[in-house]
Length: 302
Image 1: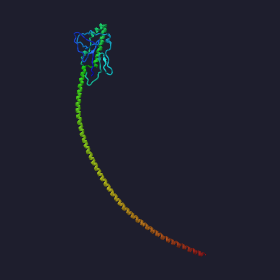
Image 2: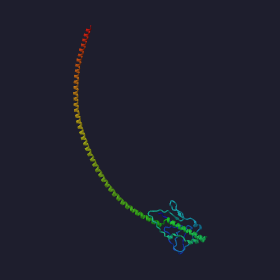
Image 3: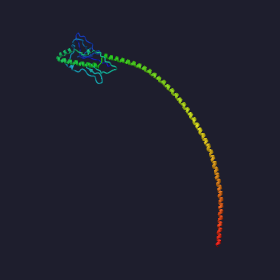
């Protein structure tokens, strides 16, 4: 919460025999009055009709000037005449603490004495009452707005104490939560570490078992392939031997057949030669016979 300093309207109440009430807490000494003296802020009177202090001098246009300004858009405080304002913002679990009694907010000056003072300065009674009524309304509205938007030192201290208590409780909760969370995290980490070790050992065992099974399967497959290869080699040797024997037998048969063919061809050649000689002999006998017959016919014709 910002440390805001509040002021009062530039009026003074000084009544003889009256018991002054203390002003709102947190008010500071401000230069006020007609001539800029540094005086204590005035207090409200409990009873009776009060009047203004004699040293003050008023001009009729003084009460018609605007004395209050709003804060700017950035939220920075701007002067309300003798006041300083600030913007209100919601805080953590903020609780409104109203420490100023309501009766102290109604009026901050003596209206009857002000009317009399205005009449002494040239105003008639109706004008003075109208000015005082407008000033009273403006003062009430301004004070209500100011009390809604500003904070006193006591309110600031109460709010700071509330925030500090909240921060202390939050700090304790954070420490407790941190310890409990760290313990839980440590337990969870230990549990996860144990589970990871178990999973790692299980994976190692399963990997070893799978490796042994694969090695056994590979050896069995290798022996089966070796046996199959040996059987195929035996079958191939048997087929080769059988083929060789059959080839030898076939070659011997072919050789015998070739010899028989050669013998038959030779006998056929011999037969053909003998037949050829006989044919030539028959032809020669036939030719000689024909010649003999021809010579016989020739002799006959002669």
